[in-house]
Image (cartoon, rainbow, N blue to C red):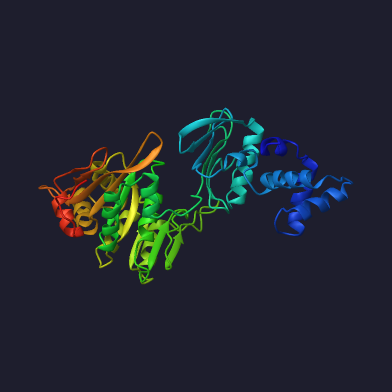
Length: 391
């Protein structure tokens, strides 16, 4: 019996009893708990069936319910569309699955997951972002904002923390690219990891932070906890959304200011998406070398325009942004995705042009055979590498 079939076989009365029992005695949904509740109903089943039923009940009460069977290693995103179709993004790319949810089933699942993440999702608050206990990020939208059934987007954490060596083994990095990234970390070069959604920005950033010396204190500021580098001294700060009355919110701007008082060796902003770019640039211009973050961009050369747009939110005009960013940030590492594989495609250096605005000049083009760009000789000197050794 598949987990989908087993889940369908779980009775509503048993689920209700399990939920009531969890309220009275919080803990795990395990075999003894399910057996005890079945005994109260006068039901006796075999050991194998009891184990399958326990797994199905756990999926319904504490897991992803009908989507649980899709949460396998390598699946980074699980998406439920308004028509109930379920898609998965994994090593083979984005593709549909055989699972399909009815309108009521999708809504009930969305509401339950939002509640598990401490967020409200109902007709009065039809959109929710939440962080589930297992690290999964949830975004859900209810009708009428979605034209059909509920929309559910699940971004799952990596099953294992990847190092730069692991990224090389997976094909995301060539040996030469891995050496470049290792030297960027060792020389405390400030950098941004750019790319589109699902290109592996957080994975690469986490792998690079894992290569930082163990003597360094890394302070990570994120909207939702995703970065988990394999490093002995990492401090996490996570933004808090406002409650339904609009109070109690703590944004990334405030957290970047807080982290300056925490004796950081490296300041990391998980994703620059707003006015916090101003605080990050100011922090990196006050002696905090080796800082880094991620940003959404289509190409490495588009990062300056993206930063200028974010700078406006923080009250910085293009010239002020260019002045701050050119002295605070050195390198852009741009990731792309080809045939389902995530890979480092470009390395660019940030500088100001003749008019004082920020620009990105190509150092390395890794999209195919490695070729050096005009910014490579300067970056090679900064990294202590032979500029003629491009391969």
